[in-house]
Length: 197
Image (tube, rainbow, N blue to C red; front, side, top):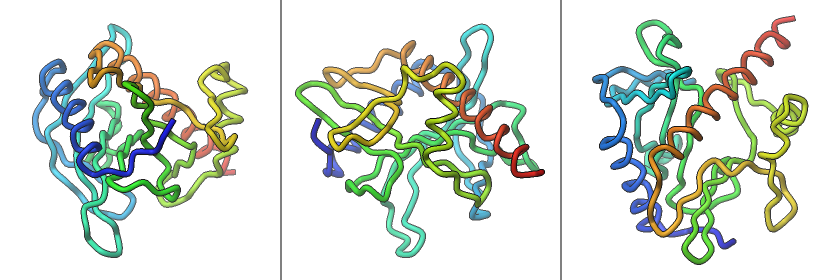
């Protein structure tokens, strides 16, 4: 697959995802989201559920911390009861950088009529970074080895979402976002407990 290094293409893909969220998922209102930098942002929040699991999500744009330039768009997710001090704490973020860089954990690739949003396994607990290997080992140890893929350079990643023919099925999007939100909460909780001791 080929990397996407085109702001307009990324914006079109993001608008497709954003419109699917707005049209197909339940709007619950505006809520403040916190993040490790201490910033808070009030965003429209949507709810998706599958009968057993329920998550909240929002879409947003984020800027480069040093320049202030908006450099990526994002879907952030949480669980409805995962509130901290009247703000929502994000569990999973699917960033889509406007310009390709291997510095980003999430990268977007395309081939023919298919787009793949990849995550390379770097996550944080608060401000603490976790090694990529921790994530991939966690997947293997907990029965999710089939989610691990290898890129063109032999590096491990997960395929978060695939978009075909500039279309996304809302049930597929719901399934993938619920899956990764719950799995990442379990992963982060595991390492929080481990690091406490």
